[in-house]
Amino acid sequence: MTNDDKTSPSPLANLITEAREGRLTVRMDLEKFVYIDRDCEYFKDQIQKIQTTMTAISRQDKWDLGEHFTAQGDRDLVSGKTMVRRWRDKSQGSENSVYAVMESHYKVIEDFQTLFRTVRERITGIDTDQAAKYKDLETNLPQQAPAAPKIFSWPGL
Image (cartoon, rainbow, N blue to C red):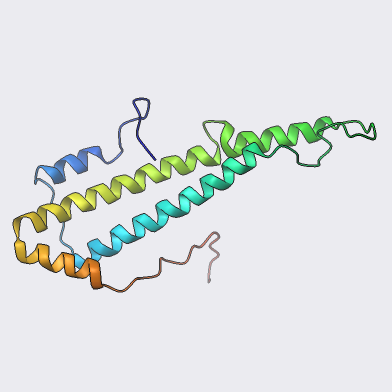
């Protein structure tokens, strides 16, 4: 994912600037910085997988919904063409497509990652002991499973 000139400013730009300039205070164990960074990478990878799926859906040529004439002379179905067009648009062909929405989520996660990296770099840039401790944690801290995704939430569950 890359930012281009057409993208809107980062929603966390002000906080990132505050962190870079030392006007933002965060109190957190160094191991939490490691886990936040790893979790951000995990979620960015998941978003890219979803976007790859959406790209495949938008490019699928034949859906077998009656959207094409067949060799036997069967008639195409207008509703089949309509459904295919809608699925393509919803997957990657509009501003509100799944792909576009995932792109905005990706950018927010990148911003959070940049924010926490900036804070961590200020902490470890000032204190060499903390810098060494962070490098050790980054190398040796065991992997932590990301939170299980919950698509639906029902009272009592």
